[in-house]
Length: 117
Length: 118
Image (cartoon, rainbow over all chains, first blue to last red; front, side, top):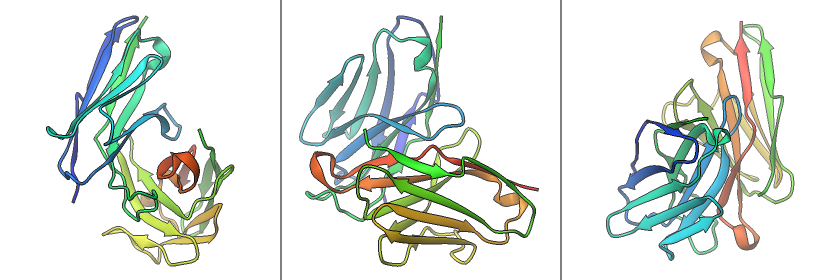
C-alpha cells in the first residue's frame, strides 16, 4: 500500500520567514495530494490540494509543488504569521476520474510548525 | 470549503456505557465518510470507511462490534462506541468526501469529538 513520509517533524521559524514542509510517497498511482492544517483540539482543515496533472498551485501565501517523477510534493508558506502555527499533514490518495474511488487518504506523520513573533 | 459538523464535541461517560457520535456533511452529499482516531501528537488513524447504504469497511485491528458505524443517508454517518472503557478515550474525527461538482474527491474533516471514559 501507499506510504507517505513527511519532514521535518518540527519546524520553528521567525515571523515573516518562509516555511517548507516536504513529503514523499511510494505509490506512483497516487494522483491527489491535499494538505491539512490542524490546530490544537480541532479537526484538520484543508488548506490546499494538488492533482497530478499540475506541477504547482498557489493560494495567496500558500503554495504546493509536485514532482511526479521523484514522487514528492512540498508545502510552501511565505511571510509566515504566528497564526500559521499548527500541525500540518500531507496526504496522498489514488482518485478515479469521478472522484468516487473507494480508496483512502494516506497521511504523513505531521509537522509541528511554530512561528515566533 | 465544504462544512462537516460533528456532535458532540466533547463527551464524558462512565465505563460500560455506549456513546454515539454524529457526523454530518452540511452543504454537500457524501456517499463516503470516514472515521479516524487520533492520539496525542500523532497522525490520524483510519478506523473505518462508511459507505451510504452499505456496511462499513473496517481497518485491520478495529473491532467492528465495538465501533458500530451507520451511514443511513448521504449527509449523516454515526459512530457508536459500545461498552466504552478508559482505553477508548481519544479524539475521534469524521471526514466526508465530496463526490460532486468541481471539488469531487476532496475530503473534509469535522471538528472532532473528545471522548473521555471514566
